[in-house]
Image (cartoon, rainbow, N blue to C red; front, side):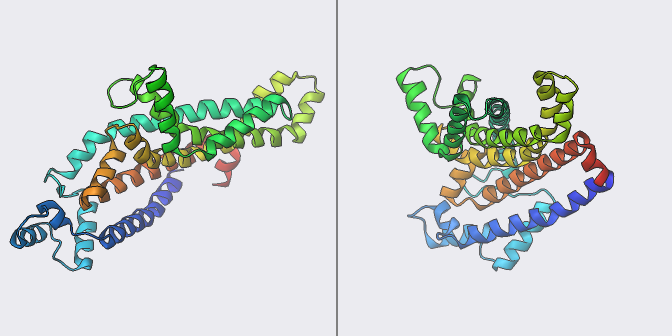
Length: 307
């Protein structure tokens, strides 16, 4: 297992470097001069040149990339172009809000998705099955920003049951978590349903029934143990989707967090903040996928034996 973890970490290094390289090139190819944006429209050319030299923007592109890559390896992300604050301090201040949003959204998606998937499989080709399949299809199809706006209009404006914007309390986390987790819940529902129906037709299930076990025992003690294994492998992708979707969700609900920080940094072309935020998000995604793979090995003996 230790060798497997080390191999996965080694494989993750090119992924991180490739992501950093792609983001670096895209940001530098965008129109607009960061130094001019920082100085303001009425700033003197000397002021703009001074800022460009101070932040190293007058250097060749390859030299800027090499400096950024070396500083990132050392954990030095520099200072924000917008307010000259250390980038790491800004990330640390905003990261807990995004992680809490992603955690609650993932929990919601897992609980709802697995529950609806089991119900849909148990009541296959009945009314409940068709209703659940329609709900899961809607969940996968609805854009997060549209659903977020709809939730605000219904639960915050119309009925005034929950707050629509801001951070601080658990109530302010409910609507954005629901909007962010619906897509994952719909995806898990479809996967769990198909997985349960596939396992039900296995020969060992027929043998268990022939031994006189009740359907409840066969389903909950034997079928689900095998049917939920594919759902575990999706958790890594699900968490990554939650972190990426936080950009839109935090903007719609005016929440402070890493996603909102990235949106503001893009508008200001605050290059160090954008690059550092994407790197942190990538590291979290890789770490979650590694944990999911390790847990999958412990849950499924066949995978552990193969590795």
